[in-house]
Amino acid sequence: MKADKNLWILVLVCIINSLGLGIIIPVLYSYGKTFGLTGTTLGILMASFSIAQFFATPILGSLSDRYGRKPLLVISLAGTCISFLMFAEAHSLLILFAARILDGLTGGNVSVAQAMVSDTATTKNRAKRFGILGSSLAFGIVAGPFIGGVFTKLSPQAPFFFAAALSLAGTLCALIFLKETNPTDKKTRANYHEGFKFITLVTTLKRKTVGTAVFIGFLLTMAQLTMVVGFQTFSVDVLKLTPAQMGYFLAGFGLAGIIMQLCVPLFTKLIPSKALLLMLSSILCFGVMFVSGFTSAFIPFAACMCVYGLFNGLRNPMLNSIIAEHTDKAEHGKILGINQSYASIGQTFGPLTAGLVTVISIHSVFFLSSFYILVAFLLSFRLKKKE
Image (cartoon, rainbow, N blue to C red; front, top):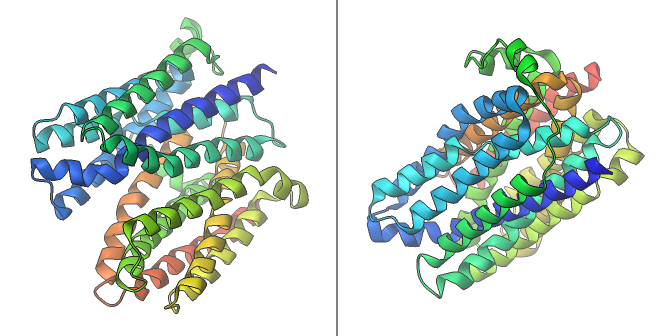
């Protein structure tokens, strides 16, 4: 019962935190333009978060293995709150970069929350719990832009103050109500001699099952962010959608992923093999993404994006479950942090590679995304073999 209570508190914390992120995404560019932000520097600003997160997340995860999950989660949430306040009070482009980097350096909340879920989960319910946590993160990203648009009407700074208030609420909620899932004392901390070494980012990839799962997650994250670039350019230049219509489209895409993640228990009951579920979702995503490269009309494109949104929702619950089940509990935080690190780099490389192939054609972006998915699908045979 306590584990279930903790799970729902984590869900609430993740919804609050992801709402804050969703609120600022659509208003960041227009707000930053007052300080000289351009399309080029926006890309660098977004990349600065991912790079900072790449280095910080595994360290935070490793520290949560040593000192407990709760204090590291609280610190991460507090860092996000401070970064939003820095955005609201910014008077120069330098402050915007400092705020984004701070958010990245303290951005271990997702991986620490995943470690807390894994600490109390069993083999049977682990995928279900990861699915519930993933759907809470997706909900905030879907609902956030709408809330951000409403608060922008009050003032340019209002969305950032509201996001900071939400993050503060999440911090207090975690501090007061959340129960520690990895209790430590002086004796256990004294026995924890090995600190985090950055070479672990490389050596983890050499671990047959865990390394394969982490690299598959990296590829599928690149594929999704590549698709996002193609979606935006295709929607504007070919389909001629308005910003409002694009917002509705993205909201529908996000809702499809939420629905699928909530249905994870049904899928795992029908197909107990997580590796097989990952393979099935990957090959379906590959098919519709490849077909998207040949579409030029709204209805077939929307159908492809709907199918992709649905089955892409199975990705993280399956991969996180596989990683946790092949990792010792004492290093759940570190390994899930490393997994998040590679995902953050995938979020950077995806848009960069998509931008390079757009010089060929808009449709080529979807072919590139499908190529990443195909490689991930082929690698997933290794997971099935080891299962």
